Length: 185
Image 1 (tube, rainbow, N blue to C red):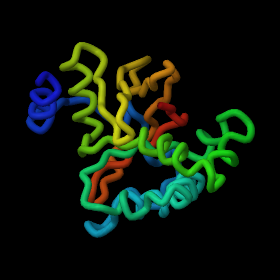
Image 2 (cartoon, one colour; image 1 turned 135 degrees about the vertical axis):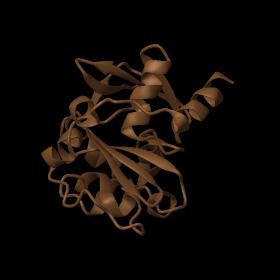
Image 3 (cartoon, rainbow, N blue to C red; image 1 turned 45 degrees about the vertical axis):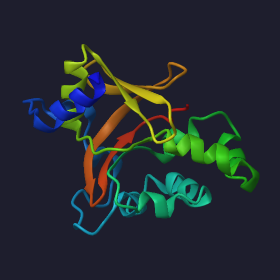
């Protein structure tokens, strides 16, 4: 019940926070375009970014393209190529193998929230929840958001942290927020 009320409040809340200061700026990541047509979805946004080629390859290998092109709504925390490179050696290659498709899908859907959450709404939710906001992922477990050093960070189930570095890349079916590390269920 608490989560339902919080999500209802999210739609109505407005804050005066500068999300570029708290979550980063899309310009740091060489995203080809920060403005998208109303017909571009979250997959199109990732495809148009030269720092998300590994994510796009993984989404294709997991057969999630059609799902993520669906109506949504979705919020995707999109790890950059560098974020994938920071995983232990061989991890990405192993996940991309056809026999690991279900594990890859699990990892990728852990980065997706089945609702639209703007950066401003995320900060408001963190504050309203007393400093830590839990979000249920499409994968089925929770991903936590909190503030650290003036930035919004995600905390996965193992306590690993990923900083949001660019926000509010708006597509027809949701938001994409860029993160600097892969979060794991």
